[in-house]
Image (cartoon, rainbow, N blue to C red; front, side, top):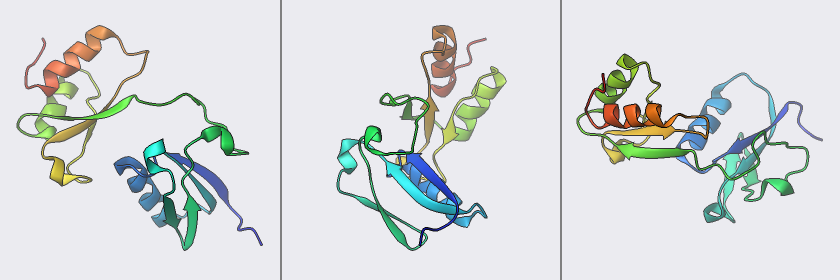
Length: 142
């Protein structure tokens, strides 16, 4: 008998943030009937365990019936960068400039040292990206 609840697709399920999302979903009160882990071809053949069930990692979102991704193209907008000093200081500089600097990776991957997960899209203006790079590199642009 099928479990009642949501069918949730997790893009990047085998990465740091996908793993964190799955952990938080597991701890939440949200009723989940199925997880559809989606990742790159590097994760082909892997499986994700969630709430006592095992789900195969999908590497082609078109093979996942009933799941419509808002942006079905490959997503390479997120990347981790090392920063001098501390990630907290780099993100503080970005906030002071009115920018969302990213996510401090220390709680999730301390072995990376001071690092920030950054996301950018085609809507990001070059000027804003340049200002963010300056903030993360230890400079203020204003």
